[in-house]
Length: 167
Image (tube, rainbow, N blue to C red; front, side, top):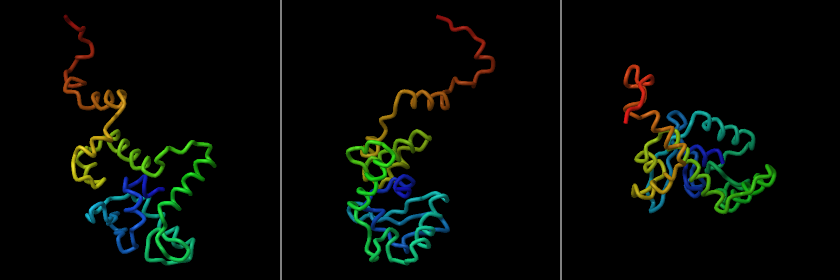
């Protein structure tokens, strides 16, 4: 879950990762995207600690980053079942496309926090900008907040706050 929220990767990309695909020094994850396109995805320092903790706690050293007790990669079905159980425990209704909803949340939050739609395209592994723009359905409040930060008039004219509007 943390890897999905932190990277925005597809579930299949994350579940296919091997330990050798992780560059923990530079916080980069090598994933195999759609059409067998390989890309490097950054992850946070906070996330870096979790796989090691998981590995040490389990006492196993499988080939795959997220593996079953027998060492095979987890299936998307196993992850979905776990997410739905977690939602039930938290008394939260699971979205219809639960695991993909995490990718959507990543994309929307990325843009809300000032990320570029062009960089989002690269992070998500989209071949066209149009695919990334689908995630850009921000709320009016989001647009207002960004406008306050980038407006050429906001705070750029000394004494402008005390000026009265003219017709």
